[in-house]
Length: 555
Image 1 (tube, rainbow, N blue to C red):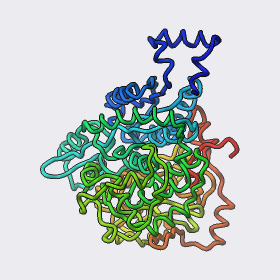
Image 2 (spheres, rainbow, N blue to C red; image 1 turned 45 degrees about the vertical axis):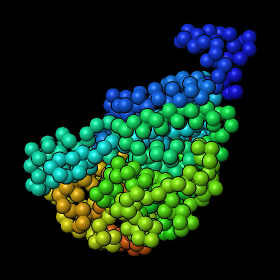
Image 3 (cartoon, rainbow, N blue to C red; image 1 turned 90 degrees about the vertical axis):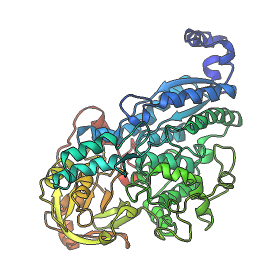
Image 4 (cartoon, rainbow, N blue to C red; image 1 turned 135 degrees about the vertical axis):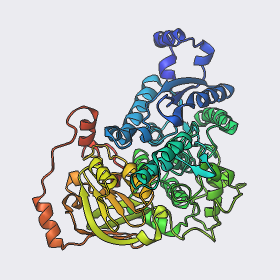
């Protein structure tokens, strides 16, 4: 066992003494040592209850003959970090999480890992770590939050963000917003729509690194505890059979994840994270494959923000496995792939069925014949940009309008709330990419304000930053190359006509190639926004959004 290097032989007597200082006995040390990575905190609602999940995991490990050893990891709440300097640290924390798990796992010789995340960057950070370490590993998330309810209306966090714009536009009173604020997020769990956290928890299940049910069983259900116990038992089996993440994270597994991503209408952030996880697993994903899969995969679900349903509804309709079963009817999945169940994808979904065809459309009657996410390219985004096509109003699928240019999210948000953005405008927010932010901030506040003011069918927003999974409307992010690297978005001028054609996958600025080249030749990079600390180091090493915004020493 890997753990022999910290517990076997005469020379490891000091090591055993330190274990015994924590109360471990010889019988425990003879078993596989399983690291249980707990992202519990009192600052992330999705993580508030993870101690309960971890206790169940440890029970499962002990029942299966392993010894659980718990250690913590950080986690940023994207909602609380939103729309201020804190958001610079959100995406950057993904790398810190992966690095810290790597350090702990190698330093202490764990035989296997159970990773217990729930929210935005914690899930991909943990998945990146297990792909990098390649020791037997399994994920069990904390589960989705239930949707809020008020006066017959179903609410979620997005309802509150959009309410800010509605108040600014005079469409809602501050007292009404206060009432929504009180009940939109009724308890623990990852925010209830198909936002980034739930997207990644569902895709962890599809990738094969989590047990069926991981993505959709609500946080407060006892079934979540039972799944955690089974997860703890399963990791010991993985250790004994030496089944490692890279046995599961083959190229076809990522194709499955992208197909389900399109069917579910996941967050645009899923593209960023799947690319990064693939990089750690030694698998290359380019944006072109995303469009190819999107073109052949129907969109079967319209969960918030794209529609009225929430993840609890997806759970009741049969969950992720039911979606996969529908996709398999048209041969859209690789069914022969190994998963942490010890069985194949095909075996896992054999008994799955759709229980509500309003929530999960039949494969022959989808919401649309193409997937929920599209990659756009053109002279404004030579390396690509990403849009959640399923959440774009039909009238905004093709749009031209004048650019309203801002060099920060804060400037744009002030202009939107100040009523300076008009119907037809294309808001351009730049220098918010991985390097320029630094940290690639989410733009939920500007997009929610636009939606709350009733402009989401008339105004587009473009950025080299990214969007929350809760974002809806013609919101196009991840524009690459980013402004700080001298991408074309850096030289867009106020009033330039921006052309958006989502069906054709185009994003262009309507100026001549000669004019564009002249502007780029005259461009000079501004001073970095952050010059010290972790973010300054991050900015020097981070790659483009088109490659997952991973860190590379050889950039």
